[in-house]
Length: 442
Image (cartoon, rainbow, N blue to C red; front, side):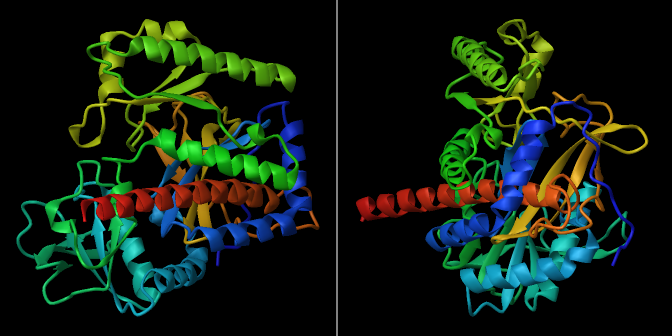
């Protein structure tokens, strides 16, 4: 196990008071918080796995994205491997208690060396959890098994073409109980995965072809309010304000009136909260696609003029989505500063927390020395600090200060679990709609 200490990144801000108060509250109410989470997980099962991007502004700590098909397991501290293995066992026990095998379906990346390391790490964790595991690829031109030697680690991956026989998918003669998606289905659910008689996690209906960030943050708003009632805090300290525009075409400049109006209204709401707490920083918002990942279609706006005066290059950027999809909806989210810095180059940093089932299994810092503290860090120049969280995010230490390790990491874990709980409610709502639709069709 790595014993070299990794300090909490220093906060380059004078606005540490409210966050220290929040961290002190979380530490003091840890038993109540954990009891509340246990009750919530009994009501609503957690996602199979998830990752949450957080922003620590010094005066608030909030999630800005929740991914239900997380890549990046290769960036976690190897010291937490046993924690990941135990969490995978618990997750599989809940999904399919009799499962002996897992079919892992990844993204169609064969040249993204970092993503392939993620697949290899996830494959290894599932195997160490005591399951047979094979990789079923959706690559359209893959007709026979293909072995890849990974450029970074030298590990080998065997990709096999995913096949379907009647209502079950398989690779060769391997017919598993469970299909684990590590593919966010931005282009939609492929026919081969539709209506199969196997447990598929996460549910395909939660892919980015249907899922909307504004729905998720609507559920998160409810969770934050309930949590605030338990801990006696202002929910705004853990909840980014947001608005959304359902129909917009950046290239044709259709729906821009909705966007401009909502940017202006949200900036007013943020100014009011800043005034309430004596925060002197400039409010800003983040405009991004309501569906999608990979940091595509994201911009920072400090005034309505930033939106109104977008040039063609900016509009083209905002219209871009994964798999060549066109952006048709936008979420306008309160911009949360990140005042964390790491590395010799003082790179802007934000924490990313990973969960399997209800367990926090680690995290890392996303760094970008080419981006400022108001900007999206998931962009060119991004790198990761895989050993940043050298202690788990699941247990506070009452013998040290609220802003010391591991208590700051515990705060990260609490807020990340709030996002996972919101995702759990989102999944339950989608399942209820699916059941209702099936009943109506019958």
